[in-house]
Amino acid sequence: MKIRQSLKNLNKSIYTGERLAKNLKAQSFFGLLATIFGVIMTAMNLIQKKGFVTVTTILFAVSGVFIIISARVLKKRTPIVITATVMSMIFFTYYAVSGANEGFAILWTTMMPLVICYFMSVKYGIMLSFYFEILIILMFYTPLRQYFAGSYTVTFMNRFPVLYMCMLLATAISMIQYHESVLVEIEYTERLNNEVVKQTKMALERAGKLERLSDGIVETLARAIDAKDKYTNGHSFRVSEYSVALAKRLGRDEKEIYELKREALLHDIGKIGVPDAVLNKPGRLDNDEYATVKSHTVIGRTILEGLEDMNGAAEVAMYHHERWDGGGYPSGKSGKDIPEHARIVSIADAYDAMSSDRIYRKARSFEEITEDMTSQRGKQFDPDFLDAFIELINEEHDVK
Image 1 (spheres, rainbow, N blue to C red):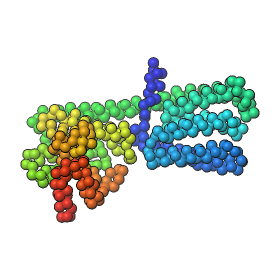
Image 2: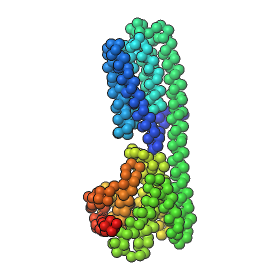
Image 3: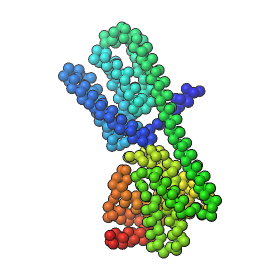
Image 4: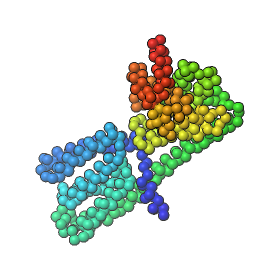
């Protein structure tokens, strides 16, 4: 039963967040080594006039280039894993069956599954090992043996399949243990973040027993939220300032402006429940990581809902990434179905995001920001609120 569960766990990816970024760098380095090796072996084969073997080493170099592009440009693991596995099967099947380099080339079958296990996928590495084991058993322990006698010694043919089986089992056991230990680490991190969310909610519930959360507590929470993301320090306070300025331009009364200020400060409170490795990842997020980041809206509402005087903040936390045209998340609300304060914070949030440096880009120019935001009038943003906001920032920019 435990063996079945261990094999099932191999389908769970261990590459997310910071671990994924490091793995892509390692694969890029592996691709570089493969390219260099392929070029060197191609040169040697051309000099020695090795014939078709030269084609395989050329393809090996090309595969290395493809791995570099996938890791550095596309930032995708799946094409790398599939390419490395398939090309290894093709290359080393040919080397083994042809007896290339007087049978020496078959020894590469002992290394490639290990490389794929460590750098790419434990599951694919083990599958490749089993494929090679079946191949050499067919070659050396069946009537086909006579066809390979010219390339391999009798001792080698007798002993290599047994040696390879021992190596396969040792590799499979050690790599499955490694894979499971990483999964345990990931699960622990997720539980830790969930516990942080739980404890934060409990703390807020205790504070909610008072008539209202004090401004000091709200500001402290906002600082804690901003500290979670080292690339957006001060974001919550700036979004709050922009939201207040827009509310004043729209003619809202002091009580509503005061509530909006507090709601904007807490709009990203759900990021407390997003793992740091995902939140601070230096590069494009994959689909699972993007879904994790988007979950901060629901987490935010979960933390704030039910607290006295925090219903408005819960709505802003939940809906500040909805779009006027209905293409946002998490609920796909559109138009005036989106709470008014969430529509205001959405504009302030987008403006601060574009005017601040992020890990993946520098701040946009004022002209670029106004052009981009104006292009989203009636699409991403409430058209009336956006018009008022553009007037506001244009006036402030002219004064400066």
